[in-house]
Image (tube, rainbow, N blue to C red; front, side, top):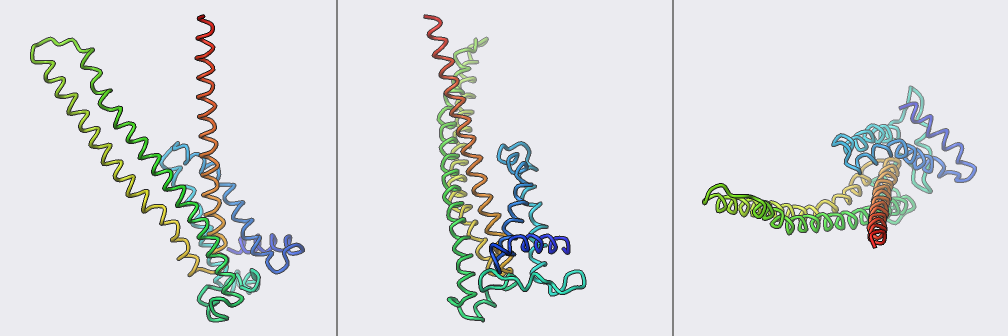
Length: 266
């Protein structure tokens, strides 16, 4: 933890000529960005679905950083010396203070209370953005499942025409088996659609749980939370944008290839 406090303190000193007493708060944001940049390759692999482990690692690797941040701004001493970080502020609020302490100092709209209200507002905006994107992703997934369910009966009926029956009773059994298979696929798809619909309504709301955490941890840890959460949402939006652009280019290339083949045949 002493290494972390030293790093944040040094970053704060570099930013102090520009940001004055809020330099350490800016150093925490910068430190969080550096951590997320280091984890970006794992986040990119998780988005592509490369491995199941890749989706968990970015979250798990951030937990030690968050706990170090929490203890660094909760401990009176670090390495046997007074914790110098506790004296730094974000505007009027000490970075080691909690919301309950800010309420005791000047109330909800006091100098410190307003800093926490600004933090909560930023977290709420990020959570709302995440919720909107989550609902949109769930809707697209449900639409894809519905499309797959609609195509399932056609795929199940295709072998019936190609099969050459050896016995008189064979086509009846094959047709019954195909119909049963299509019914099972449609039933599973319907269940998946219902699950996706329910999850699409509930999971995005979990983003607002960060508000509760930010209300009970030191202000510095709250800054870390809002920065890493905003990074996660923006990162996923950027990766989704790049994926859609790549798909569009691939479709356009396929169309040009088909058009070229038609023209050459003529």
